[in-house]
Image (tube, rainbow, N blue to C red; front, side, top):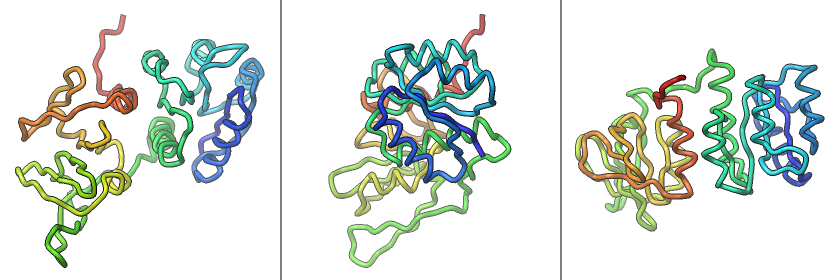
Length: 242
């Protein structure tokens, strides 16, 4: 069980996060407050694993709060402003959730925190034997696709094209959001409103484009998805530690 607290100067934001936490079996809400200084005092008295932290608050910003606790707890930033994402990334936050926060997006961040805080309980990896069946354009035909063969998925209105590492292009009568819910992180990530890619096959990230193995096509990184994607990649990025 992960003990967590919420710090946000808006009560309605606290109420929403409280609702999400109550629906998440591995999270235990210890405390919530609109006062960051009050939370600092609590952290000196009790071990807290995870903090859901707003960025813009009158008495202290979320970034200043992170610096003040000096790594005592993991942090997920919650804010309506995307411009703080890079600063959050530099301060090693677990995730960056943009308000209003849906439960689907919340649970992805919470699962990421779980994998960092309790590494002995990792998310189940996708096995080679895992597969899905998809409806094709041919009536009554269901096609089996091995999950580990999927290179990337392109959404096109009411259907998707699934690209495999074998060079197949499979057109399926699905919504890209349906596949996003089935293909879980960290193996798959949505980088654009129309694209989901398999992170295993990333060869290079260049600006706002991702180059994959087994294909010459590049996958765009949309502005809405960039901060979350780079946050997902941060553990793999090697930097010079001074």
